Every structure is written in structure tokens, then in C-alpha cells.
Length: 200
Ligand SMILES: [Cu+2]
Ligand SMILES: [Zn+2]
Image 1 (cartoon, rainbow, N blue to C red):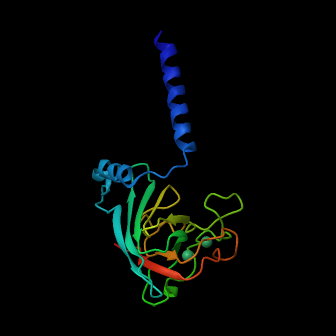
Image 2 (cartoon, rainbow, N blue to C red; image 1 turned 180 degrees about the vertical axis):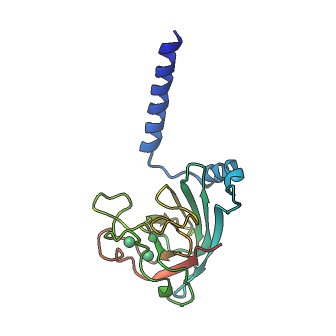
Image 3 (cartoon, protein in one colour; image 1 turned 90 degrees about the vertical axis):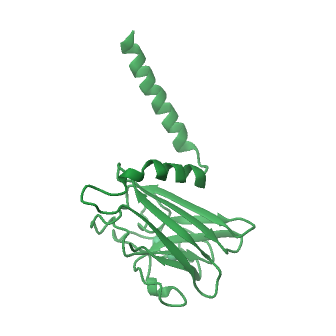
């Protein structure tokens, strides 16, 4: 009897997790915050390296766009990102990681181009024809100018030293327009309206 029960429960688990993946709805801030809380004891590895950081976005190009971006690396080495933004024009905006943690210029261009350590074309995250490690994509700001952007990926790490994965010393950039996901080298997303260096 027991032998039959185990495979059935495994199958159920598989079905449940498949359903979860098909669900395109973004997790709520509350759900993500809860997940982060549950992972709290994991934020420091055995050597005491921090695997969690929160950075603050600053307005660029005369915009009012600001907010916070939290990164946490879990025990499965997935990096979760939760970005809460405000001051946006309602509608679709691009959100990327650019190659340098330098937000000093008024136009945000000091952050350089897209972070692309694997020398791929610009594209939609996960596209078989390639994409930059910084191609997070688009999000929609609501009528109040607020937006939520989330990611959960094992293609990044926080401070692991692997050049193809390490997001430290890069920058988050929010754009005035949307990323068309095809134009090279950066999706024709327009001006940079907010910037934050990913630094500890
Ligand atoms: Cu960008
Ligand atoms: Zn790109």
C-alpha cells in the first residue's frame, strides 16, 4: 500500500509545481516579503558573507522616479529581487542591469550599457536566441505611478565572484519608455529616469 502512495504524492507535487509555473501572475509584495523573512537565517553564509542587500534608486534626467530594490540569495542559490518604485508615468517601462555601479551623471549614462558578461544579443529574458544577464524586461506602472518588479533566478549571484553571474558593482536602471526586446543593443527604451548602484 505504501509503495503506491509515494509515487502518487510525487506526481501530485509535480502537478502542483507545474501549475505554479504556468501562473503568470506576479507574486505580491506581501508574499515575497514573507519568503524573504523565511530565508532570513540564510543571508549570511558560513564565512559571514552577506547574501542580502537593499539599494535605493535615485531620480535621473529630472524625473521623480525613486524606490528600493532588495536582493536576497537563498539556500538554492537563487537570487530574488523585489523592486518597489514610485514617481513613474503610468504605463510600461524598461528595467535593466547596466554594467557599472556609477550613477554619478545626471542622465544616468555613467552606468554604461547593459550588463552582458556572456556576450549575447539584447533580448527577452530566457529567449533561445540570447539575452543579456541584465535584460530583466518591462513592468507596468499603475495610475498612481507605482510599480513592482520581481525576479527569481539562478543566473545571478550576490558576490560569488563568477563574472558571468555576479550582480555586485553593476547598476539598476529604470527607463522612461519600454524595451521592445529586439532593438540592439538595448531595446530602444529611451531616457534613463532612475539609477542605483548594486553595492554593499
Ligand atoms: Cu537599460
Ligand atoms: Zn540588454
